[in-house]
Image (cartoon, rainbow, N blue to C red; front, side, top):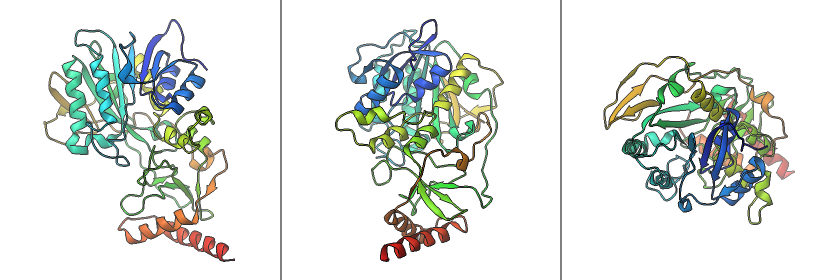
Length: 389
């Protein structure tokens, strides 16, 4: 497909990854004029799937194109729990500053600025990352608003919360972000649904999700990209989803990242990193549609004191910050059960992975579904007996 169209509202994408923001905005009517991505595998995906030239390095851009919206899912490695937690001054995440260098206070370009990243940045180093972002936006004359949004709200069986930060110098960003709200949703386990968990964890965090997978990640606690595991209580199995279903969890078509591994030096496992770092297409489309057609009403907002923990939603202008009572579910679309969503064969979780997880889980104080650990023990026992035979 191509997303470079005429007679459309325009967009540009920095830190574009495999095009989640760009594809979602295209579905909302935005035509992408330029993308920038340094990862050679991701850049090949963009060239092939979006049929567009790719700028290789944001640090080498001389200027930004004139567009209606500039979108950037800037690097999260230094801001996530699974990453280095170096903060906004880290080598990767500090690259967001390259955007601010290219926006002058008196320019009308861009009309909208959209930044996306992990919600952990709201608490890391007492929220230093968000404080930096909003101070730079206000220095450049923007009114800003942000909201933590869960991709699960759009009927996708993945629990994936991300911060959407929308800013403008001529428009009010509050109504697109806050105008609709469906309220938080908690999926309760009924004993039959598949559940997702991270087998690389088990001692400090479980990454647990009922009838869904937990957040796909570009890297794990071990520093390698890896898929979550899926427990099926109907037969006690533990398995890993196919990369093609992982692409679908992010709103792409099966095989979206295949062009990446056609580049010399790019490993097959790199596809998991690309998918884990991607912006969910459904989330991006929702916000694009909201920008084009804002509706609804504004929820209650209260003054937010400097030094307090950043809330899940807020807005600000001229040094004043207001917390907003918005949930992570702006909408609630009919969910697809995880069992029905999976279209490609799964792979059994290895004995090493299952036994390692079990050992950590049994030593931890984490709470589990009553039958879950029993199934993990039986799974490990079956594997060991098979190996002994």
